[in-house]
Length: 260
Image (cartoon, rainbow, N blue to C red; front, side, top):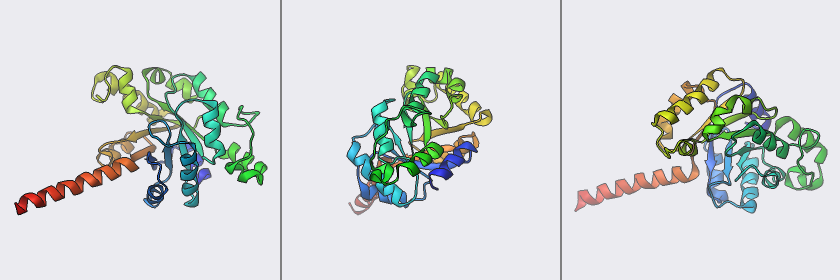
């Protein structure tokens, strides 16, 4: 799936499954690219990935012909510009709580007259060799996802999704639960009600609805797809590694006990 195919899939609410990169390692990134995901997200909000590492990870993802999205640390004009100029297919913007904040994200990601992104020549523009071609591609295929992870974002969901240039949203379940004073408690009635609002939009809304399945991703995936989510982040490099290590640790302990 390339950038134009992801853009089209989001527009048509076609189901796609991607994953999350939190480790600044190109070898791990390459393994994730070979794992069959439709797209990958480079996380710059809750990881130690810096600008240089981000650019390297985008290069690897590009070599596999996959869309590379960047979750920026915040809704910041300069940070979004760095991600886009490094060749990101698009951005995921955390903690979008109002249509005004959604408009700011769109403005930061798009060139004038559709936005206010500064014009420079770097990797995305083939180091200055193809600015015109890149400009058209960015106009057509840049992906902008609002992360809804606060009760105010839930309250303003329809207005946020009405902002031109926003392709969809993705639920951030941990921060969403925290905004109700129930951090990590996804069974709390307030949190369940908020997720219900997101799922109602997933079924009836015009734009794409996403969620990040963190723990127990495999178990929850069919249920979430049935609920109407179509832009699904499945696990992460760190969690896949941790789960495998824990599984092997359990095997070793079982063998040791059997031999003692």
